[in-house]
Amino acid sequence: MAYWGLTLLPFENVVDKRFFYESEYHSEALLRLNYCTSSRKGAAVLIGDIGCGKTLINQLYIDSLPRDKYDVFFIPHLPSSLVD
Image (cartoon, rainbow, N blue to C red; front, side, top):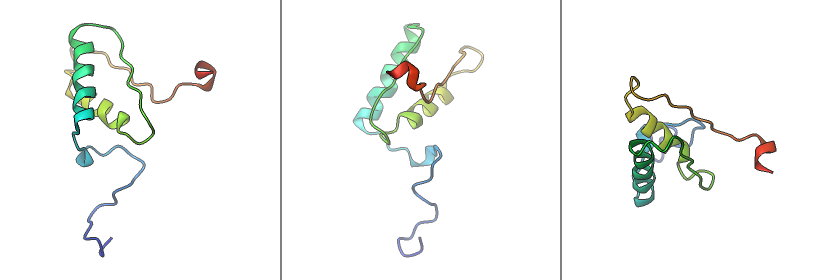
């Protein structure tokens, strides 16, 4: 790590909001989640390739919602019986 001048390990297996980079796609995902919430759609599903930032986007969005107004359920993995 010293060679690269890093002070934190960059590829841990936990969501770390300090590493969030808001690309055009991430902005759109946040906008769509906000639309679903403000339009009272009841549920939203965010899908994408492994490692594209779905969990991080969800965590950022969930953290932005007032807890006294919303009940949020995050399901990180679907059972394989539901996918087949």
